[in-house]
Length: 557
Picture 1 (tube, rainbow, N blue to C red):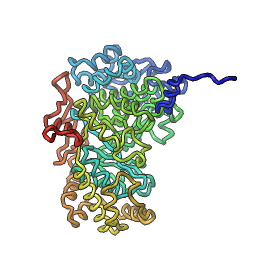
Picture 2 (picture 1 turned 90 degrees about the vertical axis):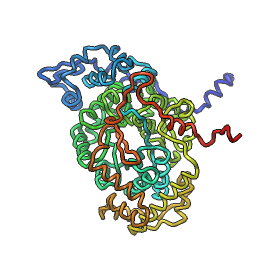
Picture 3 (picture 1 turned 135 degrees about the vertical axis):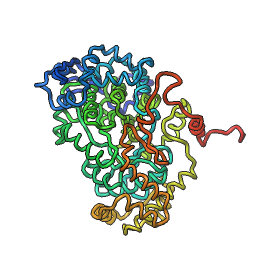
Picture 4 (picture 1 turned 60 degrees about the horizontal axis):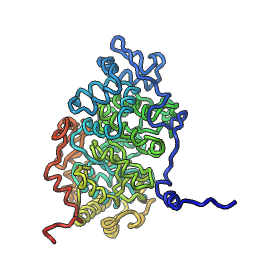
């Protein structure tokens, strides 16, 4: 049989990057539907004697543990019947109406059920969701978070990369490991490097929850966010957890003066094979409400490591923006995803970020890769350091504050070198395997781990274990740095330790400025009520964003 003649245009199209992505039609029975599953419950509420006795079509006797927790701790029963009496369309219009204050929207949304929240989002298109984000985010000033990891877990390179990330404007930096036993050194590298780049930078080491708490209590990290919650009971139980156990862990962090947020995201229950035929957004609404009920100040969501699931179904990226908006409407900080890579298409990668980038969120990325993606141990980010000039150009193109700033090559080299030398001094002071001058030089000028050698891993791991056994704390690190002449970094570390005592940065959406001032939803609340209100970029900040180093200066022509 003669081969059918092909359209050359379709042959070209089939070779485009987007055809390497995974797409699937809606498969309701397994939960492969972003929003509006016919299996989602119908919104309802019944309150008796101040207690929710019926929610979304279920009586209290039939609640699963998530529904019981949500009914008891997440819903303002005093407002519930008033709020639930409004239609989803009316509530959606309140979200975008500049004449309805944020506080009034927040009052009503704090009394909605998961099904009602999902129903409200279904009434909104993506532009309306973005309009509502600008009004509903907790903190007025947007900011950003970075991933700083290394395929080799190279402590000198990690410190240098952390310094550069902080210098570029990331207010939070997060690491994880390739080899688990390297974790203490990774935390140490980010602690030191972050304070070199900008005093006040918050750092964390994403690992097993008990270890995260331990190093946080020692002052080696400043916050945590990889404390996961889920939208179905079976997935929760599979992780040997309940909403109550997660609440207890959150209290443990707060009692030691450590900022923390929970993590969830559309698609996680599908990925675990336990979505119960519900839509991804409905299940995520339950996660957001568990977070609120636990008393946690914020949530990392936006699908996160499950992005390939909603990214494959119709309206999936819209649902991701909607889950961010639900989080804001419940008055929680949102670290809004954009972290894990999900597409081969550069066009889709950028489009996925637009709903958070243009209106701004508390943390636009919960992991912009500040290293090349081959070094990103979170499975790669939607954007990496090799995209950073494009990102700076987009800020400039649209007069948007995406949280980053242009920096010069000389500034970056100086910061990287100082961080590497500080790590060298610490390793020598604590008797860890020596860091050579050559390693300092390579880390100073490197792009990634391909540009540096491999350390003596067995000896490093022994030393990392000794760091834990000997109970080294952030104050011990500060003392050692001061002794070796790095008094400014030591002072920054002491300032960060003092934050544990004051507790100011436990407030919703908090970050710490270079002088130690904490900015949060308390002293920098979002006041958006239309044009000319809310976050207004200062002239100084606009001049900073405009000044990309490769732009032609008219006076130089």
